Length: 189
Image 1 (spheres, rainbow, N blue to C red):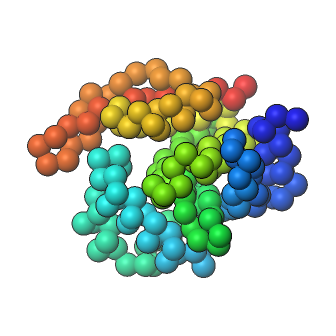
Image 2 (cartoon, rainbow, N blue to C red):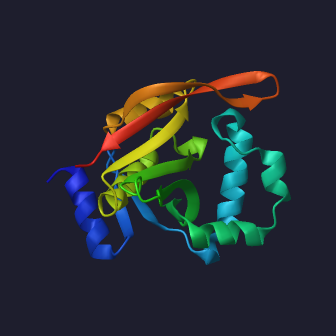
């Protein structure tokens, strides 16, 4: 059985709460974050914005000023999967389905982050695989954007079947620096 089939079967059996085996044979608990995870989600999101400020459209200064209740609302309105390391929220990935009548066949992955101490351990792949499996139950394709300077993430997405289809020049601006974003898609059907 391939790893993707294994993940798919666990995802469906567990009803969206699944422990995923990574490429390195580590075991990563992955589940949808709920309101009780609000404080941990807020802390991880702020860490992501501080650690990689150029990789996200949001900025730390704005997000740190938001009350905890707004992060809890974000968890209620969005599907955000969390990956755990010994019970600690250590990674996250967001997924949503487009809502328009002509684009609801598309999903979007956003907000991917894994704590740097766990880079290369398979948690990012496990989170991405889980989001893809979730997407397969709802959409025909999944899109994402990634800053072109983040080659580690580009390689991860390519290894999971995403392909670039364009570059948005100057997509993000931080101070006086611009960052291009690679537009990527994975077709599921």
